[in-house]
Image (tube, rainbow, N blue to C red; front, side, top):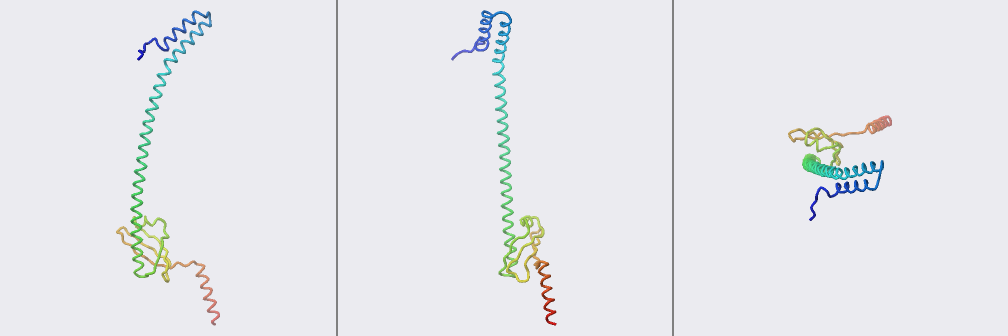
Length: 182
């Protein structure tokens, strides 16, 4: 193992450069080369210490960045897990409500089928409110309003929604039948 002394490296370079410059040059060239030798030696001494400080800062910032990334990643995964739990709970709640609505309607109309028309029916089931469903295989009715309250009770109001054009055409047909009967 070699022992480092103060005269190895930049200091020995400076001594050798000054001796060479003073022995081989004269005048202003000697002054300029001496200044250059001192500048090179100063850079040789200063740059490595600055470089080490920059590297240590980079390591610290990389550590803090990785810590921040880990923290953000864990927050995101926690949010995903929480939203997955919440969405799975709302999905289960919606399935339960769908089953209850189907049973309620099938007590009167055994062949009934239906679908949600309202957006986000899981919110209606969780928070309460009124949602609309479309009914199939039910005579005289094609829609129903399903009312939810905070006590997990619901009620269905059956209704028939007919476009105005159909009503107008039906009334014109009935008027034509009445006139033709006279």
